[in-house]
Image (cartoon, rainbow, N blue to C red; front, side):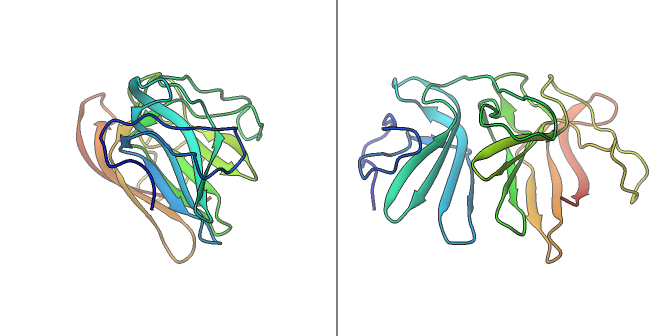
Length: 204
């Protein structure tokens, strides 16, 4: 359907916000992807080849619709730091930092939610993001390096609870629209780093 039949190809970004049959994301892996309510495919981040043919972590966001890619936000160059803005406030200037191995969900209205991963800024942050109506919002957690989890009381929700920094967890959404997160490779409550088996629920 598109792209190259050769490895390590650079992306063709075109003009941000404008679909074009010549646009294509660069070669990459360990991305976050999802499908919106009208069937468009979305792609964020990963590790691969940027517009300058340099290997690194991405923070670019793409949409595939009607046979064409559109570069929506983020940078066409690798290893970019995030712009957090004010927690809970959407802003067109906000964007998560470059990362791979993150986890993503979509809520009932098709907004993307993004958590943690392997980041250019801090190895593994605990930041939670939402992408809605063309803007990113930093929703909670920290972009600082390798934060420990705050577990609280088992089975009891609290605004101070947060999973520890991790990469490669699994996640899913239940019929009520809650997000679930299990395991990954990251930090436990005692600052040990290894494989995890903790299970979390988030009600967006």
